[in-house]
Length: 309
Image (cartoon, rainbow, N blue to C red; front, side, top):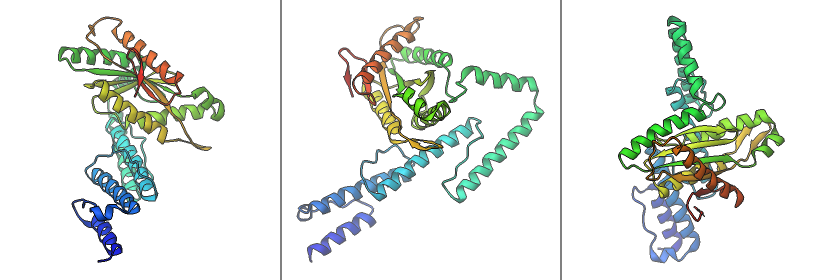
């Protein structure tokens, strides 16, 4: 059998067989075939993860197929976030990139919104007002995440719970890099839209027990439950890459953004101390300052001496 035939049969088995075939020694001598084998293997693994509902895989390969997978991954992550928003009662979500499914989804959301509106009309207006103002009191009106006060109230509760069970937690402070320049270039309305889209990107990747809040301006704070230094850095690094790899879409076109992070782990100190959260925040802010001073678009863990991951 000629080498050409062996190459073709190997590639066909990569495309068709359930199990990934090993690259035989005599075939591995060809660097091009080795590259094709590795790229197809990666694409298979990513596709398999997608089929099981796991959209967290990093797509490191290049080319047209990889580009399509990245677009699909981004769309599916965004779709998951939109479904979660509908679950939370946000019926303003619409999708326009999945054909007939988009039409069915949008009709469903409109029907849910109409049904809820009709139901609310039948309820006492005072109750509706209380629920509405309660939401406004606890959330940032621009991005929909917790406001500063509510974030720290919830973080204090979760830290106390975690301390009672010796569960590690981490806090991260995120700052959008060069955001003043962004506003000067595109305008403050575009800056507001950028913050909304960045928050969507972040929230789509957070785990069930994680949450975020707006600390002020272009700074946000994130809480990670049951994670140590190593795990928190992996999570934050994934968030950093997602922000950097997903431009925000404005009327003038896509615009690239990136962010810096300072991360700190809760220690053995008493989480019931009145200034405990502020101590954590101060340490995270120190790490964030180091990240910005050493090039930005990176995550730094608070530790003496600082070191980046």
